[in-house]
Image (cartoon, rainbow, N blue to C red; front, side):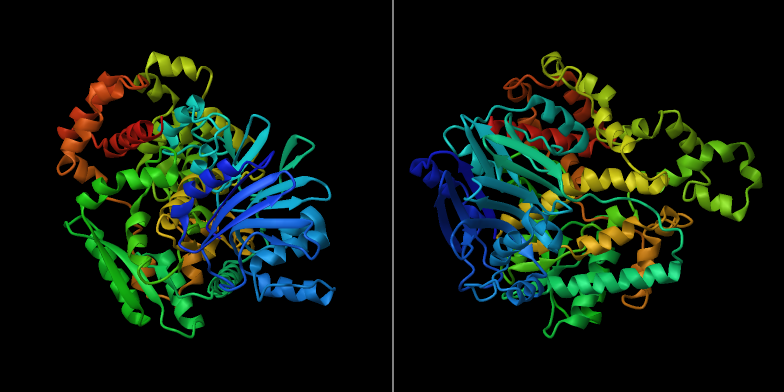
Amino acid sequence: MCGICGFTGSPDHLSLNRMTQAIVHRGPDDVGFWERADISLAMRRLSIVDLETGQQPVFNEDGSIGVVFNGEIYNHPELRSELEAVGHRFQTHHSDTEVLVHLYEEYGDDFLHRLNGMFAIALWDSRRQRLLLARDRAGIKPLYFGRFQGRLLFASEIKSILAHPTASASPNFRALYHYFSFKNIPAPMSAFAGIEQLRPGERAIFENGELKRDRWWSLRFQEDTSLDEGSAAERIRALLEDSVRLRMRADVPFGAYLSGGLDSSSVVALMSRIGGRRVQTFSLVYADDFRHKAADQAYARQVAKLYDTDHHEYVLTHTDVRDSIDAVVAAFDEPFSGVTSTYFVTRLIAKHVKVALSGDGADELFGSYLPHRLARPLHHFPQLRARLGDLSVAEKDMLQPYLDQPDYLSGMLATGDEAKRRSALYLWDDQGKQALLSEKMLALCADEKTESLIRELYSTCDTSDPLNRALNCDFQTLLPDQVLAFVDRLSMAHSVEVRPPFLDYRLMEFAASLPGVMKISNGRVKHILKEAVRGLIPDAVIDRPKEGFVLPIDTWLLNDMWDYVEALLAPERLDRHGLLQYKAVRTLLDDHYARKANNGPRIWNLLMFQHWWERYV
């Protein structure tokens, strides 16, 4: 299932048709319409499981319960067998969608806990005149909704809601304020006033004209100190292997992303061992000679050769990036300046397979990014800096990989507590946005603080483990709002479904039970994961430095895209909204061109915002 949209209220065939048009690009397969009671729905299905009889919506035996959903339920064969054993009758061959209506009949709202998958679900109970909306645990699949003129509109995409004649495209300035820090709009907000999104593991019940929301699942970081490293590594390996096995269930050909790094290489290795057919793998390479990118290509080819995959490469140029900006913005419906590499490699994948497994989620579970590497050293540095020349081996481990950078640690500590320090690592913190944003924008966002959002996450985190506190922050913000957002939006733009094995809920819950010292040990990132896959993939891949699947946008902005940047961020274009101070923007550009500072990420952030504003507002 590739996209859902619907609304509660009087059936409106005009709006139904318009919504259908709005989601046509999401998939090449079945289009269905659902009109029951006071719900009208339009949907388009990307057929992955049960190609012949798996059309949506699906109803129970008497038609009183209907469901549509976006995603896949990986354990649906086991659930189907359990339900048949207690008397439920199925009409489809092996549709995972039909399992949902019978699970709801059997378990009520608790049916969600039985699911292993990625999903955005809309379930209508006509007897109770009740709509249930739910999003999967990690937030792999999106679900937006809004109330307009007495109707509740919901969809996988914002554009489907905006297509309804009652919906408003007015910008949400408070949400946009946070974009300049996060590079994305943070849930539960959207870029449009009146439209929200469910958080990961959240559900909403619409009944008697009232909407109530609650979290049906959340990841709890609570360390199990009884675990030893060897047992933990074995458990991770077993859970990852079973997760890959489940995600290889499909009635269509599938492949895998392969960057040459630890995470994707581990997935490809397991796929090759489990599957009965040759795995197709896909990598992104560059026409230009960029630092480290040749190594990525070499390692990916090494893994592909080792496991005899059918390997494909997409050669990317700056022209591809510039020419695709409008399509990327259209895929998100919101300003987004995170990674867009997925768009290009998935363009290649779509020519060969419909489903691809990826390594997404491993960084946020096992520790890799700068805030993760800093968490433990910053926690221990205040107690150790007075005797840096006389530390034990264990104490030196606490400060790695920054043992030899005490001035850097001191400077970070001077920023403030963990919430302030984390905010300072974003693209712009609240203080920086005071200089970037116009008085008009700041007035529209009075009292809005990005630091307050981060402080709330830290204040409600159960654990005192410094690394796990940092991971919890990313698991609730960066992972669903940015990483999984670009994976879903940019793959679905090419009608490809991406399945991330690291985000199986069993593996997520086990990873959350591990102490931080197992995840980053003596400065070595993803330590326990590396031990778990030792022997599965080459040591050279395990021990290579992390590079990240990002575009070399900094270099392109200096040279090949200069004319595009100057045109889009010209004062007359910025005057269309008056939300930015042109003087601040000009300084960013001049310093970047003069190589006084690397302002590439900030310039890209402003470019994508401007493009979005002109397209949507």
